[in-house]
Image (tube, rainbow, N blue to C red; front, side):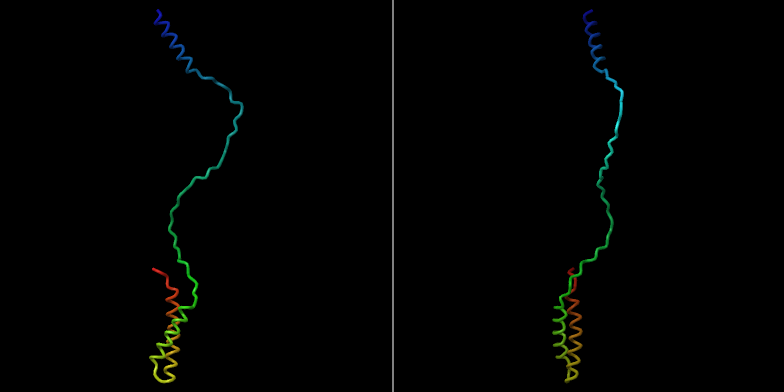
Length: 104
């Protein structure tokens, strides 16, 4: 009889421990907040290398060297002058291009 009474008391206690209180909701205010979600996006983009400003040093040096070479190759007074001018013009173009050449 004592075992039955103890078992019944344990079952009653177990049943009471799972009881829940119920209440009535009077009002509810939703809390809304925007949250930034980080996203990763991959795409291809063509990027042109930055152009360096020309100082003119390459053109000047090329003109001097080209003029000297043209003067050495020309024959006669007018031929030497024409060859020096052509060499200076060509040397200036080559010197400017060499100065502005992008590194590989």
